[in-house]
Image (cartoon, rainbow, N blue to C red; front, side, top):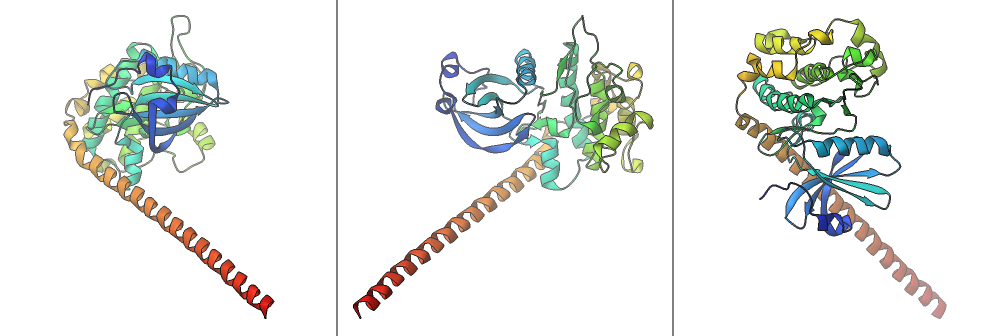
Length: 333
């Protein structure tokens, strides 16, 4: 199937329901629900985010602007947008395996070190692409790293992304997901692209251990603890190689000026020794099978409910008929 670059001008001029067939709901993203859909003109499967217009349009326009400027195999591709009544339809590249956090949740298990290295290799290439263009993602976590069916990892969900310019060298807003936030972001002392690198280190721990450090405590408490405490590390370091532990420690340096960049980390032994994407096939296949089984189970439940409702309606009609003839017989007696 040919890759879609962008929607045709003719498609963008038509109502979205004429252009797409919605297949199913995939989940919730920042600001809206995400659906799997078929682009009728080419037969390409796409993802569509439906955003209520009453949402913060300024942030949504910012997200679209950043996605429009990106052209990288490591960043989810943007195809076009529509306004439809009370919703904005944002059409994006579909990543069939879902997010890394979805896969972990479905399989009820963490990732192996080899799987993590392969996913982080692509993720770092996506971050290097953004950072060289002075863009900060600002919400790196397993839920925002998507995999396609071949195991390519892509950065997604730019709902809180920011762009650096020559006149505004550092951001000063607290935004993102607390457990993954860099200390300088929480302290509002100004930050730049390496804030994403701290979040990447937390994401590596999340993939290895199932949740980020402080994930069991209230987010507001975590916000106070992250800047005050030493950088987190592995709960069971004996389970992991020295290369992986060193890689994470290079991400989780509290002083941003001493923290490694995406370009630095791509040269780290842990990443340079990463295996091919083929090692992700079993993980993706298992998650797909579980997802299909859940979907089929839900279909069966819905069909059973429908049959039950039909049965109850039939019984009600029969009871009405019986009552009618009973009272008619009494009247004639």
